[in-house]
Image (cartoon, rainbow, N blue to C red; front, side):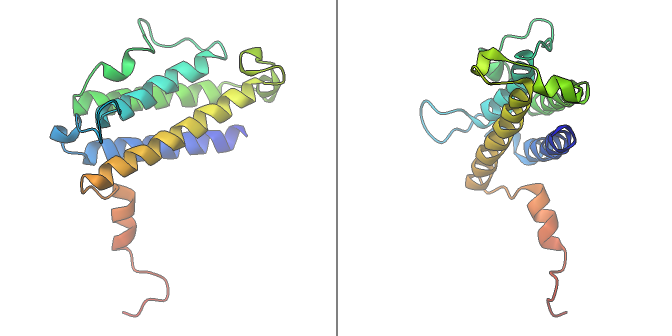
Length: 161
């Protein structure tokens, strides 16, 4: 589980940061409706979860981190990209620092049979969920995810030249 979780987190870091960089700065406050997270809030919520979820295993979040308010701390595109990178670096380091025995360590906060491997699973699943939302927000605003745009530039296998 450890190597795959790290690969997933590294891939999501690249996708989140490239998508945040592709979004126009004036779209960071766009939201699909009242009471729904804005583009910036989706990105910052993800960064906050990258600190908050590992804290369930005893990993210390950054000094002064307030998980309840973090997603509303900025709409500045450059700061969002910085926070995404810092949070993914911290999440990846937390998983890299785990031993196989750590994955099996009981974590009763999640339920009677839960363990720290379940926390890592939640971290990865949550990231994928938020990435899907960020992609939908981008597409509604006419932004093709950069990795998709790059793939479309490559010739397709079997395509005639």
